[in-house]
Image 1: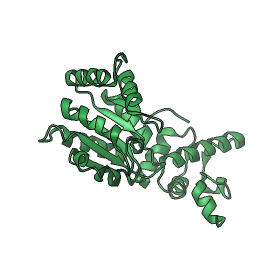
Image 2 (image 1 turned 90 degrees about the horizontal axis):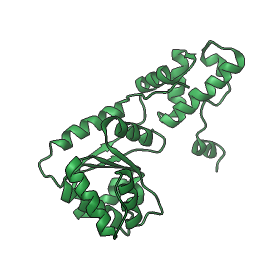
Image 3 (image 1 turned 180 degrees about the vertical axis):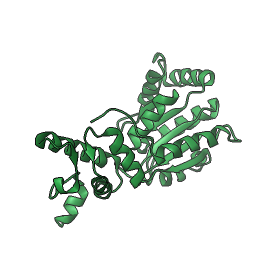
Image 4 (image 1 turned 45 degrees about the vertical axis):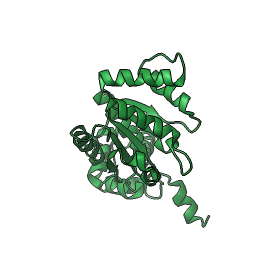
Length: 243
């Protein structure tokens, strides 16, 4: 599979949100929530977006404590971990005031739940002091969790709903990533079978490349892959089996 990144409609949504929040009125309203179904490519999209724009991408962890979260943020910023948690937080805030770097927290569902939002409150404190933007990338129900904490929800400048890939996005992905030529009909089948999830689209392309190499296919059409599973949807498989 070819290397490279596909600028999908979701990527353009992120760029639009960034421009709008940069011009916000209230400096402390610097939180942006990014929500979407699993498998549509949120992590790859936001990580690539971060690298292209000088933002700091941090993958949240289930085992994080407020202290270990601060340590991971400080490490991502190249800062010292010496001192108390408050020392580390102050160091982060001082750095962000100078650089105004945007922070992106992937798997943000780990930052809060229905019982506690201590880690999210720490992030809120940092944005209040620095005015920097923070993008929180979570699953579909993440905004509903944040809404339970009004003092944090009031800092949310925008909610970005990422969508499954459209046919044009899948066409662009297949053109950019596939090592073999795919017929238009096969690309449409990939779009249908993947349900617009980038993870499944990439798996389908990888599978097709293996079959094409084994059979010396220069171009692959629907007839070549008849009866083959282009991409495995585990939940769909279980549903079909009545599980």
